[in-house]
Every structure is written in structure tokens, then in C-alpha cells.
Image (cartoon, rainbow, N blue to C red):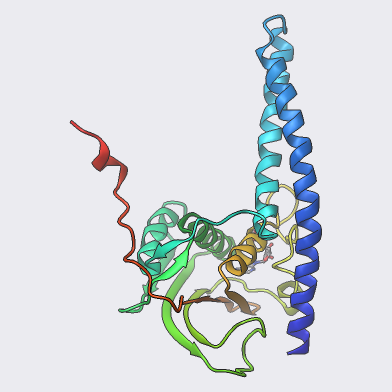
Length: 261
Ligand code: ADP
């Protein structure tokens, strides 16, 4: 428990540091982006210099995306919380993920029949499910199974198995498992830290799981990782069920329904 607490404090400290740097860096990027835009608009700019400026602009956009992920990790990005049916969100995201997975990887779902509605940001949830799915894919180069289940759990007061920041009460639990190469203990201790990656320069940013961590914390939840080298990896995510009664989930109409014709 003490180890968990120390880990949580460390993550808080990294979050504060990263959030501060990202915030200041974002202001600098905005300035660069502004001047680049002015230069690109300059009619007297030579073709060669315009092409170079377009490249600078591309680099600025990539940097802005990194900064956005860091800000998400530090919970400095506002979430748009809505009443949400988690099972539906998982189904929708798995359809997206499926397209990015090779044939040798199958997705299996075991979703609880009656899951309470939670308050969540759909785009942030989609992002973290995609991040976890992409990592699972990378861990299973020879194929395998990506498994997601949902269930309702009750945490009692003084429950020792959980992070101390969690209140007792009702939670939805998402369990995400792959049977990929897994990781050793040394690796799993650092996976939620921004920029930690074992994938090598240019292949991993090390911002996938730190974003997941930030989003889960932003939702008042908790994430844990269990991994066994050679066997696979499981993430368990707990998200609190709001105690007040929520209105029905808003129906989001598919875009095609808005097109008249
Ligand atoms: P990235 O994917 O860019 O490396 P992440 O933050 O998403 O960054 O992951 C950090 C590291 O955690 C990965 O480099 C990898 O070593 C490890 N990892 C994450 N997910 C898994 C998984 N499902 N199986 C094995 N290792 C994983």
C-alpha cells in the first residue's frame, strides 16, 4: 500500500512538472505557428521557402499534438462529461480499432448486461481504448487475442486492494487483456510515465499510457496493470458510478442522418 502511495505521489509530481512545461511550451508553439502562418501568406516568399515553411508548420502541428497529450496526462485538458453507456462506447471504438489490427489478432468482448450509466467524455474514452488496443497490437506481433470485459463492482470501506484515493461505492470495471509478450516488473513500474517507451526512437512516443492514466484520473477513476513476461498483460480500470441520478444518455445521431436528400 505504501508503495502504491509513493507511486501515486510520484505520478502527481511528474504531472505537475509536465503540465507546467507543456503549458509554457504551448504558448511558444502558438507564437511560432502565428509567424509561420504570416510567412506562408506572404506573396513575395519564394516557392522554395514556402515549401520549407509548410514543413515547419507540419512540425509545429506534431509538437502541438504531443503537448496536447501531455496536457491530458496532467489533467489540464477540460473533459466534456456526459452520461455515457460504456458498453456502447466500447462497441463503437472496437469497430474503429478492428480496422487497424492485422487479421491474426482477434477482438473478444464480454460486456455486462446491465451496466450503470457513467459520466464520461466519449472522445477521451475512445482515445484511451485506442491507445490500449494499439499497445496490445504491438505486443502481439505474431497475433493473439485482445479481450475486453465490463462489470459492476462495489468497493467497501477500507478495501486494501485499491488505491487509497478511491471512495467506497459503485464502480464500473473495464478489464483489458492481451496475450502478447508482456513485460517485466522493472518496465511495468514506469509505463504510465510520460515519454517512457521501450519501442525505440521514432516508433514509440511513450505518451499512450500516460494519456490513459490522465484520462482515468480525470474521471475520478483508477488504473492498474498486471503483466507476465511471455504471457500477456491486463489493465483494470475503475470508473466511479455517479451517486446522483443521471438523465438518460443523449442519443448521438450518426452524421448521415443529418444529410437531407
Ligand atoms: P509507446 O506505446 O509509445 O511506447 P505507451 O505509454 O503507450 O508508449 O507505452 C509505454 C510502454 O509500455 C511501451 O513501450 C511498452 O514497453 C509497455 N507496454 C504498454 N502496453 C503494453 C502491452 N499491452 N504489452 C506489453 N507491453 C506494453
